[in-house]
Amino acid sequence: RCNRGWLHLISHKHDAAVADFRAALASDDDIEDAWRGLAESLLAAGNMNQAESVSRQALEKFSSSANLHNLRGVFHIRQRQPERALPCCQQSGKIFPSNPDALTTLGITAEQIGDLPLAEQSLSQALAVKPGHAPAWFHLCNLASWQPTAEHIPAIEAALESASNDGARAELEFALAKALAKLKRYEHAFPNFVRARKRMAAQQPFDLEAAIAELESTGSQLPQLDIAAPQRLFVIGMPRSGTTLVDQILAAHSQVRSVGESGMNAKLARRTKTAMAESQQSLAAWLRREMPVPETALRVVDTSPGHFTQLGPLACLLPEARFIHCLRDPLDTCLSIFEQPLSRQHGYADTLEGLGRYYRSYRSLMDRWQELLGASLLTVQYEKLVTSPKGEIARILDHCGLQTEQSCLDFYQLERAVMTPSAAQVKQPLYTSSIGRWRNYQQFLQPLIDQLPETMLQAP
Image 1 (spheres, one colour):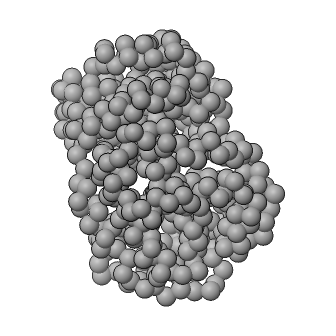
Image 2 (image 1 turned 90 degrees about the vertical axis):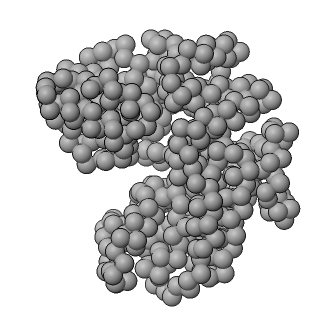
Image 3 (image 1 turned 45 degrees about the vertical axis):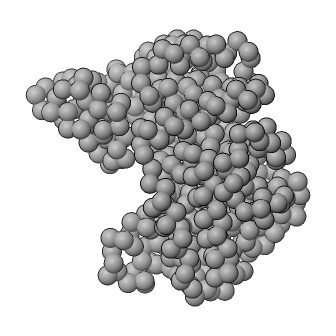
């Protein structure tokens, strides 16, 4: 049953994997492989409470297992707790210094807490142990501080050729594309991004029409706004548009606490769908409990992806809230999304055409929100923020009812874990090298460009 469970897990059949591992444990609960498989299946299925319980029980039974210590590290990473993940990874490394999975998890954790040298060292060490290890290649190639050489390309290609499943192949295709892009071999990089995207789409199909229909049906309810102090702040926008940067700038303020990407929008969507009879007052009280303002701060900020789909409910339930919309050049934004294998809620990016259609609907929705929300919604242009930071940061803080502080200009010095693909970027001063990066791939982007109005493509 364990072998079948692992096959189901690799195939993303999480419920079947859970059933197989539970059956294996029912006949013999001293099988470490079954405990680990069950915990990993629950984690992959998003059942965090059971994954926490099973992984803890497993570690109590097999305290000297490097794999289980590493799994606890992965669990804490998923829970956005890199500081708790770090000792788990380190303990795994002590027990089994040549475990590529533990070394990779340590590298991911180190990046999130801002220790880029440790991240690069750990990921490189994982590849020294296991040259074809797909997760290590993926995270190393995406590490902002790592620069490949020409010799790395054949090594990634060899790993891709020997990969045992489509999940590993997709990671390696993304890694190869990223490495080629860093070497400025853009004409070879982009086809690998396309292949990786197709492989992801085949593994987990995405309903693009339903996603676009949801955007088009949103944004018709006029909320009652409030002039009270905006204790709760929401940074919104498409992925890769500068949301993590704005969140980091706000978090650097002495009177602001950030909860990062808490998933609040998804929680609110589920709550409003499953509690139809719940009063608006009850929902508002729940939302304020979910997003408490610490006694040591005046404001709390949330940067959950997809907030732009929930602006109506958020503004109705929290009429005093303020929203900061991050906008970046459409082609730079879409290219960056296409290059990054985000969660399947972003499956609209499986094709350039689908990405363009979704982006166009998002911009239409944001136009409706701007009309409805007025001054409570501030749009911040990424390009202006990185070229004229002092004025733009002052504008952001004024919108949030805050005084300007030097720490916000020095945001990159803030010691804080960042759990998004932009973790390394917000740990360094502002730079402008990402502006206009889409031009490196212009020959490939026509299916995307065809979906965007000319007015939207004008330089910001």
